[in-house]
Length: 570
Image (cartoon, rainbow, N blue to C red; front, side):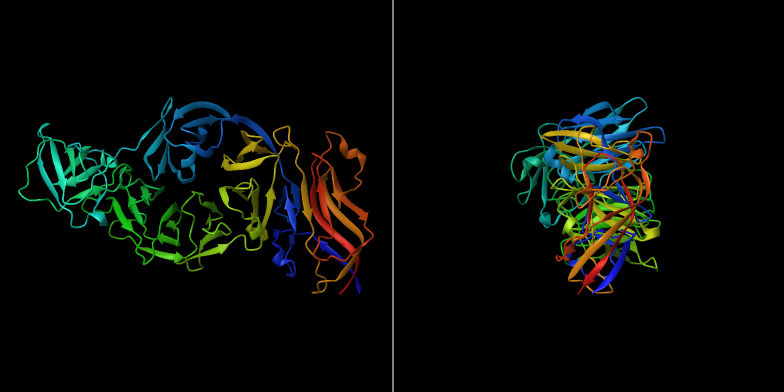
């Protein structure tokens, strides 16, 4: 038995999983709900939510920053997109994607264009013109003979297959292609084939082996079947790019359904030109991941290197400048990402942060001290219990917070300050369910579902409740006490001391802490100073939190430190 005085003025580990409750020197909590960890290590009640607009249903949010004065928030909803400026909808456009497509919809911006890709749809490009917006299908750059600068390949299932070419009754620019094995389907219509050094477009399909095609200009019939022919990599039959990015002024497409490990890079500075040409330094590039295992590319990230996140590991192309003759690609780690949902990796303090395939890890991909190899550090090693099937992710650089929405409607929040060694997870809850999160122009926007109604809202430091209607509570609970390296069997608390700042409400173990009445005027920011409360009693369940601070009142609260005075036995 002995006396103790325990002070906690750093909450740098946030809410910690129960398996760490006997770990020494963990500056954590058993509960951190609706509070943020400050750079100093203290705690502050989260800001409330301000309502922007009621929306029609499930949607996703994408920032679209054209320049310093033109900043738009793109809301993708069922078969349409809405464009917001200063929280006001200014334009609606039709789009091909339904709600079931949102999980695999990826995007990348270059200047006034926003490129969308989905494995089941031809890529689309949203363009901000001088006076308007428009969205159109991606079109490869055309040559003077009307051929397109698109990538071609020979897929494995057509190896050894030949095409017999015969004249069509339509005109001399049409032909009939007859394959030596089943090849054509209804999805072949519109597909582009390369044969006789000409590009042919499938116009109609008569059978699995016969189709009518057309080309630009006339042609000479070959005497024999043609074995040297190719397909455009992208088509309704073979699928479309699943991933998109920009790197070293090249447009990057990757991971089609038929070539899940393929990467296609446009000509430098010519983003609609994917002709590999003669291999000049600025020509388009095609490469693939070579591995004994099947790697599905999940996303590509332009960082110091071109990072390629697959279902089984993390790769990088280190070449700089990137040319057809200098593509150096290798696998660095073997964590893997989820190929079934696009959770855009976030750039945090020079590292790429992504959600692992398991859904329980959030990894930080950064280079080692030599700048040669990547490591994938687990950012939620102490807080696995908070990870529950992530469905949306975004990072606020200004606030140093990573927001991760779970499919149960709770949002896990990482407060990360490398300079003060703070990496603290907690949760945000609201009356309803968080569905999506996006950071736009340093403002955190969310889509929230309440009683079957979806709304677009944003966090606002001036708001104390959510959407002006819904109250929320905060709660922090103590980490089980370790005294002199021991886990005590019995604890008796004499007194609890609190140092607070700008605080107007506080309960400890559901009992109100008295705060001077003078702070309750509207113009008073709140009480700053020391508070104390006597808490006589004995705690035999030492795995249970000794204290819990909370409040359901919509008033500010900031906690800098907590001290507990009492005695213990082991």
